[in-house]
Structures are given as C-alpha cells and as structure tokens.
Length: 253
Image (cartoon, rainbow, N blue to C red):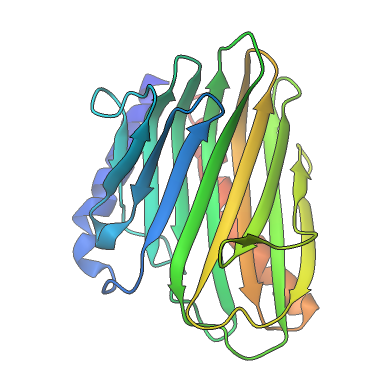
C-alpha cells in the first residue's frame, strides 16, 4: 500500500504541474463523502484549486487526508481526487477520483468515478454515500435525450451498493443500479434537462460488518446519439474511470 500511495501522489503532482493546460473555469464540480453517523466532507473543483467544506462529525481532514484538483484526463474538463480520507473511526477511503466533462459537448454530458479501496471496520451497520454533482452543463441540447448509468464493485463480502443518476438534483426514475462484480447498466429516455443543467451521480454502500470494497467504477451520461452508438460513449467513460484504478492496484499486488 505504501508503494500504491507513493505512485498516486506522484501521478497527482504530475497533474498539478500541467494545471496551466486546464480550460477556463465554466462551472463547478463537487463530491461529498458522508456516512450515516453524520461524518462527512465536501470537495469542490473550484477551477483547479480544491476547496474543502462542509466538514461534519469526525474526519481526518487537516491531519492525513489529501485533496487534489488534478488535470483531467482526455475527454474531461474537471477532476477531483481524494486520498487517505477517514470518516468517523470506521471508514478508510484509500483513493477516489471523480471526473466531469462540463460544459458538455454536442452529443454528450458525463461524469464518472473510480475508487481503489474503501474499508469498513465497524461491527454494526453503517452506510457510506459518495455524491457527485457537476453544474453548468450547456450541452447536449438537441433531443432525444437518454440517461445512461453504469457501474460495478469488487468486494470480499456482501455490502449493498446502489448507484443512481440525478439530473438537476432529482433522481432519474429507473436509473438506480444494484452493483456487483459484473457490470450493470441501464438506459432511460428523459425530457430536456434544460440549459444549463446539473448532472449528478450518487453511490450508496450499506455495510453490516468489517469488509473492503475495491475497484469501484461508476458513470452517468446524458447523450443524444442513437442507442447503439450511445452505449459506446458510456463504455469508454466507464473504462477510463475504472480501469485506471484496477491497473494501479495490480502493480502492487
């Protein structure tokens, strides 16, 4: 794990060194981590300078947790990376990266997340929620609109992981997925989201005892292509957010 953390820090520092290549600020992207005991923290992109706010309960913010707004990967404009975050005395998040392509493109608005490891040490039931919200999407604007939701998790136990897409702060009906080792996905037609609009994704993991969840990958998109080509957008974003973390973990296994 020490080698893994060292590699992650080097990767993030390299991204920060390229911050001058990032696009102008158009909107904001926030990710909130919270548990059912009231412990939580919110991290905002803030134009490439991360802002930590909404700290509640017990966390290691200021004493071990690290937050970065690294240079986004190809196809994205904003990135939030969190390393070594503890919530309460039970949750330990080794690393999690979220990405957004706000303000979107003519055919696609998307957010995605990849997390390498989330450990729960509690002996009673608890729930972890990761809530991503990306504002300022101006595209797509031409119907038909389809929400594509996809995700998977790897675990050594049986927590319940549910991921759903939100548009303008409201759940998209029928987008909720129960995640497991095999990739789950769904496509839901929606009416116009308006412009600008907010695209969100909420991951909730319910734990009943000590366990570790690894290799989490989620993606939410709003797209206008035909369904056959639309699915390819989701698969590409899903691969980018998930495979990166799986590959990094594999190097230290």
